[in-house]
Image 1 (tube, rainbow, N blue to C red):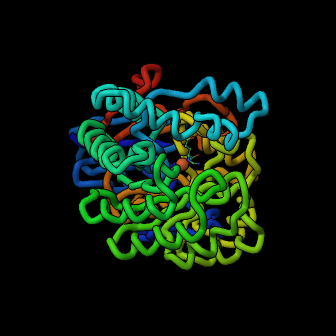
Image 2: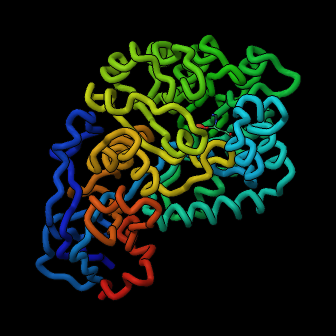
Length: 407
Ligand code: NIG
Ligand code: FE
């Protein structure tokens, strides 16, 4: 049964139909005007329906957004690492925590210990929490397997999660996250190459850092991605600057993620490239990382993207509205810039922007109704502004205090 979203104060729409992405220098062209929206299984239809027999949602005073897309998460993972956070705020660096056996290896041990049902149970609850914060599509990654069998298992668990959650899911193989015991970095990449033909992932990912892999491995992962028809994504320039962005661009990366230590000479080439700059202000905030040159990237016309980076180490955050609030404050971005970065542009990273990521006729009806205008979203930091979520034309969440709007 279709849903008529009527009388919204603001509906976020792209300036043109069928845009694959919108560069951030054009973010102020996003339209925020009232228009009725009909959401059904056949997709979105703009304007009030002539005849309507389904549900009606009274959106007076509210903003209607496309469903939010979280294109960088480490789900499904096992357990949390709260004790490490205590060490981190007391001044122990992430690299040192990792060297002491914490960090990625600690989550890898927990993942290996937990049964599949336990891992899926935690991930399922988190995916529901994400949904209630407006996330209607998300990425999952491997990377805590740290053995060939472990990586394969985490990819399988991600697909198992995909089958039970409501959201659209895209699975990435973060096959070079930490160098597994008993391997050199090169030896591990040799091993990973053998996994690839049969691994059901859309993208490959790698972490370049002093405690992980180097630029030469990034280039090699890029070659593997090209050879096997997967996108290349990469965790770069998070804690130290390795000048990895030119290497990633040369390798045809779809996205470069983190960038807190992005070199200023790499801003313009990245902004000119067809490669998204995925910024993760949750990890930056929790880890007291540097602030990336987000204002410069946006002004230079980069395809900017925001995501939660949900993981048990650097970012135990699942709320994209919170991420938007952090980005607006820390980057000096407008609300339109923040929303563009977690809708159309995030969908482009996952190769989904032909179907989702914007409110236009015929696109899948993934929609979020906020409990007020968009200006309140970054301002009421920590408040969950999501009044209702519609996924593929079906109402999947209504916040209890907003139920009166549904007739
Ligand atoms: O995106 N930086 C590398 N990988 C993750 C963190 C993983 C972890 O600490 O468990 C990130 O921040
Ligand atoms: Fe990450």
